[in-house]
Image (tube, rainbow, N blue to C red; front, top):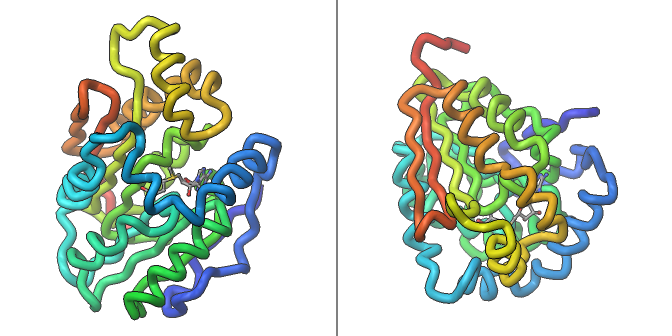
Length: 246
Ligand SMILES: C[S@@+](CC[C@H](N)C(=O)[O-])C[C@H]1O[C@@H](n2cnc3c(N)ncnc32)[C@H](O)[C@@H]1O
């Protein structure tokens, strides 16, 4: 499987040099789903996963957990339309860098619109599968919101990201999960209503939040796991131990 680079850091354009790997049927279906969602994603995501869910507050909390400073470089993995970008911009300032990575061209096109509308010159977009993304070495921080559990190789991606971080760099994952003690039929019913992507049965069986938790615990220091919104979401954070120098 080929890997794609976060090339063109100075260019606020979508890098087309990266090949989208693993375009198996699941990936193709996922891309098709997000192509349909892209145009209205910013609006409908306000109701995601359910109306009343404090999504913006969770995003703020996630960005705050990264402890970003002006001038830092941050990677937003599976960035979608770039809803985190304004918060990241506030944290890293014009001297910092944001690299947005996503599999779906149409979501990146919306992100590109956001970049243009705001006149940001410090944001790069890379079209890539997270599973094949070659994290630039020495990144100050990585985050992924409402996306990483959709990646079958989420544990490997977590580990690759951790290995690429600068010493002390932070990783934060915000995503949905099934609350503990939930009967299978109830989980199925609940998630069917939000159905974030096609392979929901596979998601329920795979329990990707557990794989992410295990990988972060293994790879990072200061690991912290917080259950949110009655256990239906989580924020996982950690930092690369300072003993690891690039
Ligand atoms: C629910 S949206 C979340 C977008 C954004 N992170 C947010 O918080 O609004 C999920 C995003 O994950 C992307 N995605 C899913 N699987 C991916 C993969 N394997 N590699 C990269 N992006 C992926 C989709 O294209 C979509 O843009």
